[in-house]
Every structure is written in C-alpha cells, then in structure tokens.
Image 1 (tube, rainbow, N blue to C red):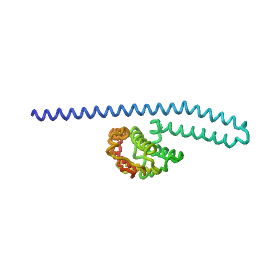
Image 2: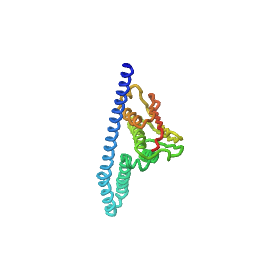
Image 3: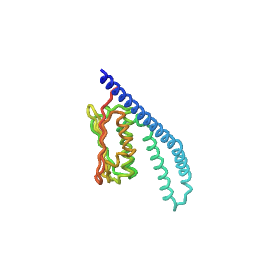
Length: 231
C-alpha cells in the first residue's frame, strides 16, 4: 500500500510538472505572437505611412522631372512602390489575426510568392486534399509559425536555391513537409539551437509530430503531422 501510494504521488507530481511546462510554453508563445503582431502593426502604421507619403510626393513631382532623368525617376518611384507592397505583405505575415482569416494554406502561399517575387529562392507549394478539414484558428497559426521559422532559416543560412513545400490533407491528419537543397547541418550540433527548440515547443503545444532531418551538403527536411481538432 505504501508503494502504491508513493507511485501515485510520483505520477501526480509528473502530471503537475507537465501541466506547468505546457502553461509556460503556451505563455511564451502568446507573448511571441503579441510581439509579432505589435511589430507588424507598427510597420504598417509607421513605416508604411512614410512610404505611402513618399510615393504620393514622387507622383506629384513626376511632371517636374527633366526628360533625361525620367527613366531614373520612374525606377526610383517603382522601388518605393515595391517596398511598400513588400512591407504590407510582411506586416500581414506577422499578424495572427490575418493568418486566422487567411488560413494556413493561403498564408504559406503568400510567403512562397513573396520569396519568388524578391528572388530570394525558387520556392514551390503543392497541396493535396481538402483544406476545409483544417480549422482556421490558433493551431493553424502555430503550424504557420513553425514553417515560417523553417523558411527564415533556409533564407538566412542554408545557401539553398530550391525550397519545396507540400501540404497533404488526409481524413485524419494534415501532413506538412518542407525541404531545401542547401548546405544542411550536423543534427547533433543544431539540437541546442533556439530556432529548433522554438519549433519543437510549438509542435508539442498542439500535439503535432515534429521531425527535422539533415546532413551536411544534403539540405534540410521538416515533417509535421497534425491530427485535426474538431470543436
């Protein structure tokens, strides 16, 4: 009886520790989301407003530019216009409300289109199955943030030329894979990286299976398997 009671207390302690750790992770992610939303809003309201004013002023000055400077002036105006469009796209990708409205698939597709437009990498997205199986909500935000972290690492560090993303909606799960052809990494060394820890924490919060594999000079592959939650 003593041993049973002791085991019961240990199990209860482990459960409490697990609940505590889940709450900590949840709070951290909520803080991160709020921070990203604030940054996105500031970009849209402040920097976006300045670029909008600059674009309008350039339009007003267009007829005053000498003929020999028209081409250079038009190029500068287009750069300001493209910068404004890029800033608005980036602002939307940081805003969780926009992600919920768009859903996972459209949010990922917007990122893919942005990468291709900027010439950062040759990216592609393939979708199979019924998108409606995945509800638009907090879980879709978390799935997108995991992919966004992977995309960021690919663009910054991988030296990849190709990025391939696939979303497969099966009857019970959505299976997501993302793969690049970059320089890869040593899995033993990357385990301590904050980016990987962050992705794993987010996946654990929604009970998603998370796997990232790589070898030097053979690129990186991310696999996520998420069981639908029907409210």
